[in-house]
Image 1 (cartoon, rainbow, N blue to C red):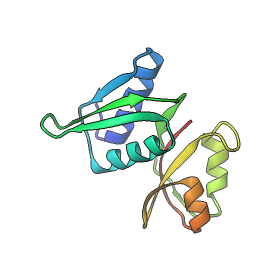
Image 2 (image 1 turned 90 degrees about the vertical axis):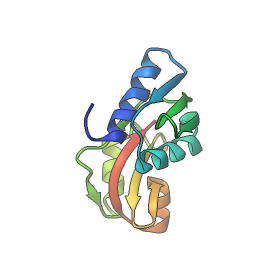
Image 3 (image 1 turned 135 degrees about the vertical axis):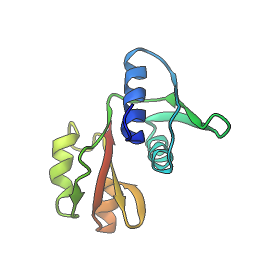
Length: 126
């Protein structure tokens, strides 16, 4: 286990999906991870997530997901550069989502483009 809770959690979700499991329990959580899971639920990549505050863990139900990874290093992008990284990390146009950390909070790359803001790349999934 590394210090990056988002990278570890996304790796656990990806491995669980490959092994055919529908649920996975992530033992290390952070506020950033919860926000990433919230966006993944909105995009239907995961079905549900349930936070267990006693165990300090979260149980995730995997939905329509092929790939999910954290972006390292967390590149800082301007709004003009988002499309360049979209071509780099996502398989095709209109397929997949990149999560960007902006000064207005975490959002998808589509929301960042419509708002006209840049930020730091956190993760991607499709």
